[in-house]
Image 1 (cartoon, rainbow, N blue to C red):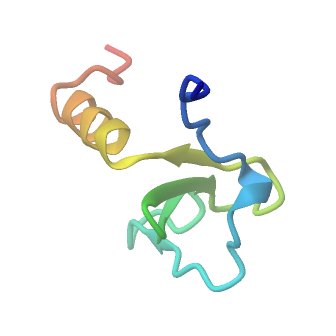
Image 2 (image 1 turned 180 degrees about the vertical axis):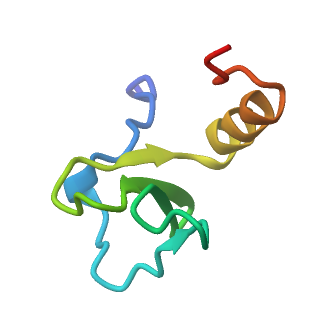
Length: 77
């Protein structure tokens, strides 16, 4: 009898090796959000607090995030 497949759990920050990550930031806001492409994931951190927890997105989550930002979902007005 075969075991049912388990859903793949998303990676935790400690699962990813970020030591060689090439962090990208807006030229006018280097202390703001920064992103890096690590394997199959996009990782986001706060530019002024590199010890803070990172956010991890897969490609579909990243596409949804970018789409929401472009549509103004994060605007404060």
